[in-house]
Image (cartoon, rainbow, N blue to C red; front, side):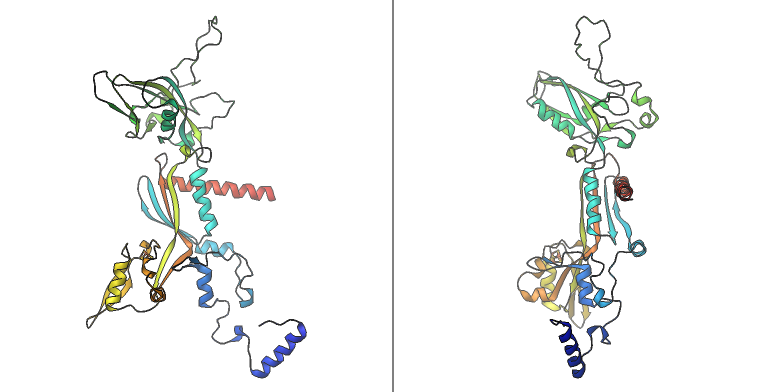
Length: 388
Ligand code: SF4
């Protein structure tokens, strides 16, 4: 209750006392230090109604529930107790894991770091000696740039404008393919790219035609990369079956491709993930018992099989929620009238994220995530040192 001035507050309090009013917080069924269920639901869940999601905000303000005696401040010990990561699926290039007890902004920070800030090696410069194929030089270079290179980018340095391409910042590949004049059309795949561990083989045109000095190549390697321990047993390769070009009879491509280290925010070719995404954990709640034929209808409505039918005996059956995690929030089950919306409540848990990382192959997905954590940690340390 509210009043316009303090005098009327007192008057109201007297009137309330005379009528036997008590504060809502003093009622015996209102638990102290705990939100009432409908507020707790709004604090922790997004409500997915038939028309649009509702209650999508996260309640950040520490004093949001102070009037109810509930402290909403962010506390490190609470965060440490609640936070957990559970890996659900892990393959060579894909990982699905649950990240629980975290704010959406942090989950999104990991996603953005993975997409745009984790470095990889990708082809940046293409020196074309001959291209008689129908693919223009620019398109061919772009296609080569998008081929994932299987090498750990942590073993390389960035190549800055003033640096010379060396064995520590550049990987050189050669591509020389020719389709026979009488042969069928030829498909050129990425396995035709051959690694040149000693660097470029193409000679730079000398500016001084009278110079007697030896002609330079486009790189300055001091040693062969395959003599380095990190590559001698694990040679640098690309994925073998990516189509680069198609050649007609007599057509030829001869080029050298130089890969350097970069990040996805400069160009998507350096992004270490094919995709990286998350969704909040779905929660499907039956607010009423759904029995018999209606239960059958409900089961058929869901395209991903979230619902099942339980036999109650005596010929009675009821609907159950068997696979809530599979829910895609298509809302088919709450269409066709308000009565369905009253029977089923679709929600999302605000601090539980199902995270999926699909690596392009340079690094395994679990390593990519740990590298993303390190980058976020570095950023936080930078902010702290700037502020202190
Ligand atoms: S929202 Fe779609 S996927 Fe989810 S339970 Fe309903 S019908 Fe199934």
